[in-house]
Length: 112
Length: 114
Image (cartoon, rainbow over all chains, first blue to last red; front, side, top):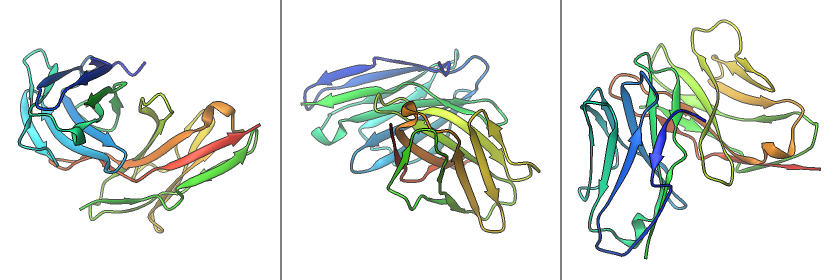
């Protein structure tokens, strides 16, 4: 158990819908990262938050947004879903020094 | 920009044998580190081992060790005494520095046979 909690573990939704993925980082970790893993794109960095503020942005689509709340949990919002958004979405967290990065078990999203 | 290269798409090894998974990297940073993660078929991403560029000795975690050669820019993962449960995808990655992103290699699929 990495200590990073992601919900839901599995989600099936229809095209055009909106979903929210939730992440609770490890206790004491200030940074939260979101990654998307699909068969054709591999592991893609989406976005990073540090103590509530956006720190780095990767290949995140405009239809996607994220935020980190004062209690440090984070949410990734995916809207106007397309078939190609079907993927495994990971949240990860790290301590301030950044040399230990633990991943949650991922949220499997299937868009039908 | 950082770049990670894993040249072995797949590796086969027999149970109880040792196996080395290759990883080369490219970075302009003076201080950096390397992670290895394991992803079994269940999908979770499991942290295995980390080594910083200024660590003097190669990192070891149980049956996992890092063969870190800075001059060759390689950070190979060595798994000793392979077990059936080691069958998984293995990713090499560089950790984020200020405002940079965690860079992953494409991964190596390891299959351990009885």
